Length: 111
Image 1 (tube, rainbow, N blue to C red):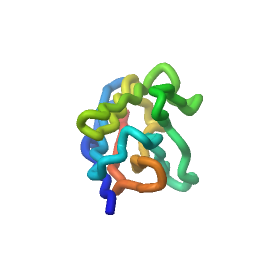
Image 2 (image 1 turned 120 degrees about the horizontal axis):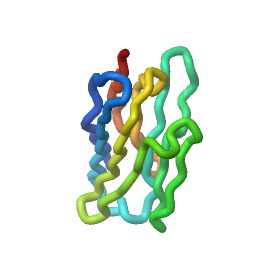
Image 3 (image 1 turned 90 degrees about the vertical axis):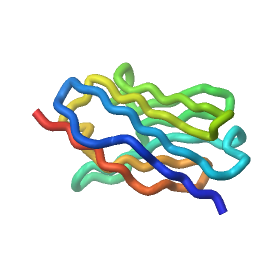
Image 4 (image 1 turned 180 degrees about the vertical axis):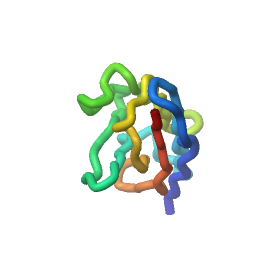
């Protein structure tokens, strides 16, 4: 059974940066699309960013230019570097690899 363990997150002021990481316990990480969704208060869960096996990436329009997703296949980890954070980035962030989900991690941005 594959497990995902997310780390990072926390609280930051607007304009600040945070980094999220998600470690995949299985051996097939390099064969899977990985990424992050988030759920903002009273909003539906939305895709933030994903990185494909090829290394190509996809971002939501709301985070383009501010967030960077990367993967380390040797360590089976996906990272999300979040810069220039805005109030509206406040959410619970969920990582995924393939169809497996990690536990949520809270990101709070305050003024």
